[in-house]
Image (cartoon, rainbow, N blue to C red; front, side, top):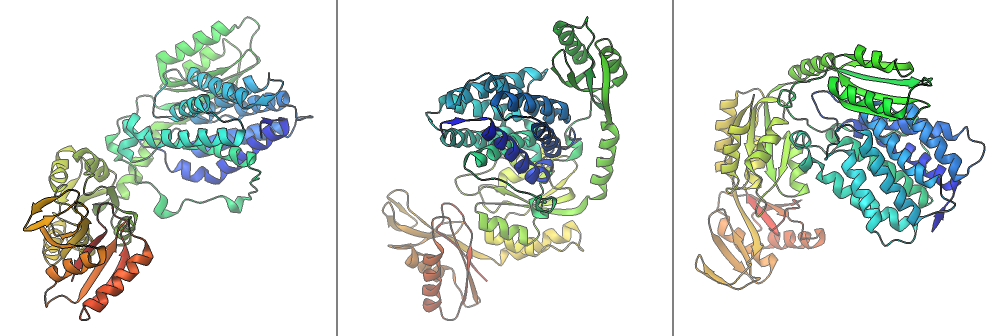
Length: 540
């Protein structure tokens, strides 16, 4: 598809609305304490729904008429900060598309550039790490794309959006503390993915029953509500200015925006001499309304007390606080799921060659709403950082259990008893990990003489947390050789955890080989998904 007409543009907006509605609860779940500015997913969804509602009233589906309806509908229905910015993204796109005789890829690229400029211009103090950053990244990707057809263009745009969204926690510290990406950015990306589906001929048909709920395990742990700062401006104030007075000029509207910036923040004033949408966080809603009345009539006023919302959140947060929680550090999706299955509250990605910092660990600890948090480093190179994280943590007692590998971490987590005190749990965990015998199978990265072995690059080696124990020509014999060194008469069970570089079929063959080689041992096979190590082995 090299060009799009009004009918296709209408389908793209409609599909975007449906997909956004489908994911709105997941987007809402990304909101960051102390008080989300409304529910981002819901606000964006209602904003785009308003544009779709306006589309149903048009008499013809020309690009110009579709663009006019979308612009007006989105602005009239805009809710919250995210909804208003969303309306401005559509306004920027439609301001270009609506004037074009034919909408081809080049025109759409210009429209995306304009969308970014309009969206940034709508916000009094733009912040990076928000939906604005995602919008800019997608616009820049469109400009640099070599695509000749719309499907290829959207593939490039969405790929850039995914990268930009993943980077938002690095741009905005509050997101990194909370361990989430920007909710508005995810909403904007969802809109473009919905539009892409329309281009691919995929119509989304949803009923209320189809709306995707947030599963318990998908809910994000938020940062400590007490660590994210106080609310400076307590009232989220939104309204329209309609029936604009004849004497009102665009310059007067600009001065009104500047005034709001002196009495609050999160200021957005968008519109024209027909009507204006206003959003501000302030401690003086009355002043905002009074000054607005100098420009025209005030309509659809909504004032939310964020201070009261915050008090309710604090109350709920304190009521849900546990006595004890657990945090594990590991590499691999399989291990991550195992830790969750045994009751660990949070998992930080890390391990050999990718050690998390003390700050990373502290941030993860703060996302666990518990008075005492046990931390399982699962690698001797991470233990010190875990200990240092204690200095960065507030309102928590951090108890580091010096686990040297993931099997020790799993055993420690299994030892947890919520009926016992933190000190008793710590003693029991320390005793439990002493009974774990574990090792890893990997390969030599260079030739060397180490621990009595003459190693060549690529040799398969087996090691524990102290030294290399075995050497082999292939992975299966590497696992066998390691177990021979680790196993004693007291062991009856071998757990094999295969990594990301091993497929399941090969892992099953290795497990059968170990069963034949050690008939007195029961052998269990699990997917760990870890990097670096082909297998992690534990004996019990």
